[in-house]
Length: 209
Length: 256
Image 1 (cartoon, rainbow over the protein chains, first blue to last red):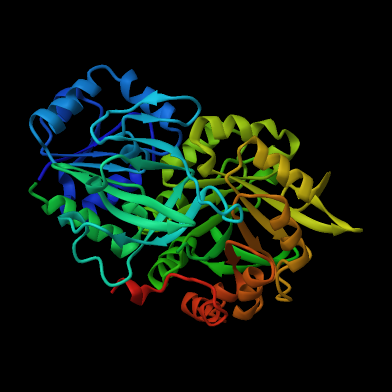
Image 2: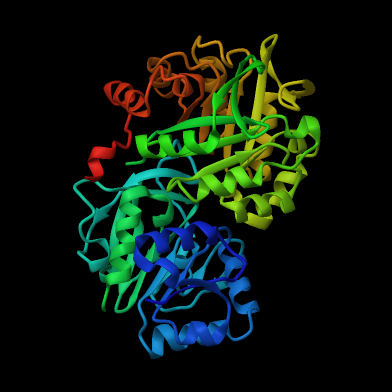
């Protein structure tokens, strides 16, 4: 099995690579920004920590990476997993520090978390219970009350309700995972979510969209 | 619903876990990597590593301990000790830390928080506040509690949040290691002043204190060291006590 974790200078890539290896990819997981490897990847993971705009800049600053991602995920239809900001980048645009275009593969915008309750701290930081609103192979078998680890101040406001796979409650309902065709993305960090996260990664490695 | 986090804290000195009282009289509490793995298996929600002598001795933090731990744990790691700026944070994040706590350097120059948050995002930047009661308020101490900064704790935390700190790790030096319970008044005052999550630290003597820190103090997470390291309570004991007090917690059995 070959899994490419896209290296664009963002995120806790060490933890992602280790967790994906442990979930079944073994030595088949590779961290790289090589456009040829990305374009021909069997499976792709786009991690991301920090600002939407920084991450978007980091991606486009790597020569050929955007085109390679597009080729693998959009032309070839390779299974794609975005994590945290890597998931947010699927959106049309992010509104963190001005408006920045995203990949535009799943319609919607990444907006400041609006909990509707001033007492709830921002960032939303910690373990929250996943509510699976649309069954998906990547979220199969997570147990009765799965909790996953979140840390974010912005959230994906998705246009098409069918693209939302998982939500959480934090004051209001917040997008916790999106899925369309061969694309899946989690706002939470599977690599930091113990058994629940490992199951998500195992499912992703087995997924044949 | 968001769960209240239970965070075992490993104070590390010369590669060993230690624990003291009021920040001194350190006693050996074991191998940090082995302890971290045990807490991960018990269902800890996060781990905190503090290289407690780093800024006193001017060393960088303990990258190898962090790498070893990050390779064995599937929960978030916060690392602190000797962090001077964005370059240190990036080194720690690459080693496997998820969040980095800054204390001394940020008290001396709060703009470091801004520089760090710009570089890695607020969610990675924790302002660690070591607070000691001074009259009606609390003073901020640096260098592992050895030096008074002449900053007031609530005002300093407010400023840190304005500059981009994504969380406050609030340690009561008066309570640290005393097992007399968290400083609830300090927690309440901090809760009223800031909007980011607060981690309560210093004084946990039994699991009931943890519930109090949340229900009375308004903490979003509870940190403890001695009671876990010396086997007086397990992570599960802490979570049961929190759940009994009506506090939402993540129980390992929920995922099964």
